[in-house]
Image (cartoon, rainbow, N blue to C red; front, top):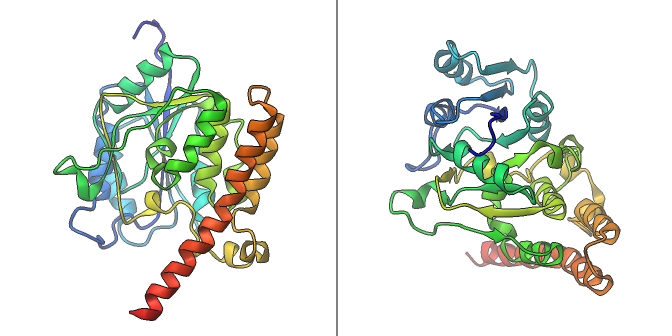
Length: 296
């Protein structure tokens, strides 16, 4: 690294019943996930673990793996928090210049932090970065590697996000500048598609790139593949979602788009249209699933 300083990197690890039965044979267990963090080649890290009132032995696994590591800060929630609040909890407890969320069924290469930190330290115009991404069922054969380059204008970054939104896991779980993440919406708001909101806000702040080195494996059955938590009571109680499921996303992102000084006037209307169009796309997918279920 060119800079002599060694920035502190915070890794937030929200977990609830991480030792539960696997959904498929490819799933990564919580021990593998934690070891991939503890064994990072870059050592100036803090690991904030929030055990969300687990009842399946998760606590014992964490304590056994991390008992001799002073970098670990362990918190056991007395009662279950909404998932997004647990994500917000670990972020609020962090103190590093850089931050990364990691789930109990995800795994990162031992050089993930080192390589992404070096990239961000040398490229100040980037808000965040990540390494090539695989879903767990594709990693063995190295199939369907996900790489994204948002070294683009603000307009192009937001426009291109709508093309890859369903596969933005590696962006959300990348290494993020804390100062940029501080400017995003409070995660505890528990809005629909909070991961998309956060990623879009970060792209409005700066660029993103998938670097060549390292990798991240995303679990296909856990929270990292469904950060929107659409089964939550909070979502079911919001009547606005029956008509505009991406209501808060539209409100927040369109508002920031029109405040942007780097996006042209006509471009703002196009990006607003793409944001609103997400609602129609959702209803089409929902109708398709309903028809498939009815015809099966």
